[in-house]
Each structure stands twice: as C-alpha cells, then as structure tokens.
Image 1: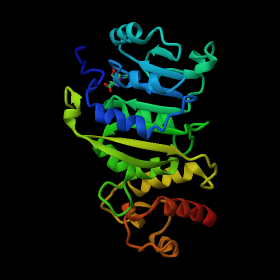
Image 2: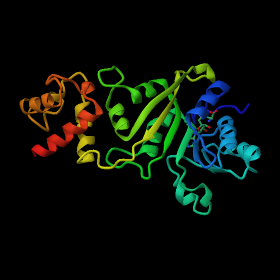
Image 3: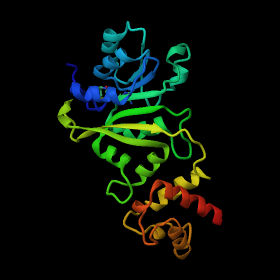
Image 4: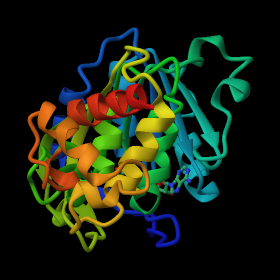
Length: 272
Ligand code: SAH
C-alpha cells in the first residue's frame, strides 16, 4: 500500500460498497467523458475505466502518478495529468487530445482541504458560473459540507454556502460514508454528494447584487436580516418587501430560501 501523505489530504477509499454507490450515482454511459480529481492509488480510476470511453485524471503527487502510469498507462481511454487541479487549464493541456476535451461529468474522491476551491472550480460563482456547465458532479466530501450543501432553510446547516451552491446546482446527498471506509480514516465522517449544475442563465437580474446581498445578509447570523442589510436599505422599508415574499420582517438570513433571495435581490434593484 502506498503510504498516504497528509500534505495532500490523502485517504484511500477501501470500501467496495461505497465505490459501487459512487459509480451508480454517476449514471455513466460509455460515451461519457469523465474528469477525476485526485485518483490516488486508483481504486475509483480502475472502476471508471471499465465504464467510459474517456477518463481524465488529475493527480498532484508525482510518485502516485508513476504508479498510476504503470497500472493504467496502456489504456486507450485514459489520460493522466500531473498537476494541481486548481491551477491546471484543462482544455489548453488537452488541445492535442480531442477525445478527452471538455469532460462533462466529474467523479472524484477529492482532497478535503481544498473542497471550497474545487467547488468554485467546478461550478464557478453566482457572478460567474462555469460554462458550459458539467452535466453532473459526484464527489466524496466531508459530511458536514454535504449537509450544508443540501440544507433547506430554517435548519442549522443552512448558510451562505448553501444559498451560493444551490443557486448554481441541484444538490443531492447520495449516502453517508463512515470514516472507517478510508485508510487512514479521516477525523470526520464523509458523504457522497451529487451536484447537477443548472443550465439556465440570468436567473436573477444582477448576479453580483445577489452575491453581495447574500454576503451581507449572512454577515452576522444571529442578527435579524433587516439589521444585517441596514447599509443597503432602511429596516422599515425592507419590512414590507419581506412580507410580500411571505417572510416575517423579523426573520434571519437562515429563514430565506434560494428563490426568496433571488426575488429579494430583484425587488431591491427595482426600488433603486
Ligand atoms: N481517489 C483516491 C484518493 C483520494 S485522496 C481514493 O479514493 O482512494 C485525495 C487525492 O487527491 C490524493 O491522491 C492527493 O494526492 C490528491 N490531491 C491533493 N491535492 C490535489 C490537487 N491540488 N490537485 C490534484 N490532486 C490533488
């Protein structure tokens, strides 16, 4: 077994049952072009290669890359890129390999220490969503992150991250994954999540305004929304707007659904 490196957040999946759940959640077709982030020792890589015509795996660790090349280098449906997923320009790197260009699915057991930046890389931001959007993104993440991404309003996990990501993608929890499903076991429990980015454009009149509104609204979670938004609009002018959206004027940011954030952003703009 290859010795895991802490620096790269390496935890090898060792549960066949979880592996099969990930594969099932990806609903793979032969014609799929799949991006895998952090193949590690290749447990998921091996299964993906059985399913699809084109797999692009990006691994930062040179020593692991050597082993992956040894094990899978001769497969026609495989390309391995050594590098940092956050730095790499995929399409530029793949110019000479048309078969592997524009992967439209992502299946990965990612390094947890860069979950946020990876999500931004795959989905973009409210102001600048990634285009073209991926069809689906299946990730192993910390359970806490999965809970936040799938949270509904009025629940403890519902926060700015929930709103930002749910604006960009439908989020679905596939299954919980106990720490012992990995070697070495991480300190936290994990979960498999499926994200389906939305294709629609211009969901909101001004995406930057919405992004700013969410940031301000959640700035102090204990405060009422109308107090957090004081710098934008006088609390007594905001109250009727909130009521029109079926919200209590005393509500907090965590009570406001994604659709209500969008409507609020549009209505505030109309008032200006
Ligand atoms: N998919 C494997 C390994 C998961 S551990 C399994 O399921 O067993 C996370 C993997 O991501 C490790 O192989 C680690 O080396 C790799 N990694 C860490 N940071 C990375 C980065 N910035 N870009 C690409 N790969 C990275």
